[in-house]
Image 1 (cartoon, rainbow, N blue to C red):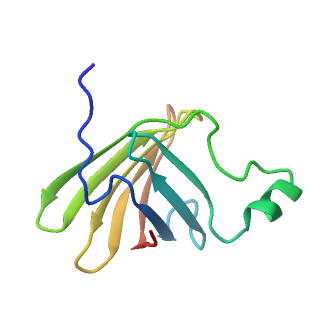
Image 2 (image 1 turned 180 degrees about the horizontal axis):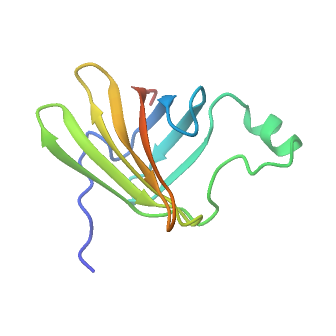
Length: 121
């Protein structure tokens, strides 16, 4: 398999996705796009100790999946990864207005998504 592209606008960044439409509407997830090409995420509204106390894994997943990040237009990137849960998240990030649009899909489900995002690190 060819190594996926990981644009520097995304690679090495921590980005919070705030979902305004879709099954996770009203939540915020922090994604860490590591330099090594892997991604991990967590519920940004809970601290890691709170998540652990509630019995949730503070960061998901323990086996960080690979991601792709490709520039599609000026200040616009598509980002995608396949989680160990079997769901694929594919979002387009527009750095001009910080809007995101995308899809989450599994073997039998498909959900359109919308939201906003901010680079936090």
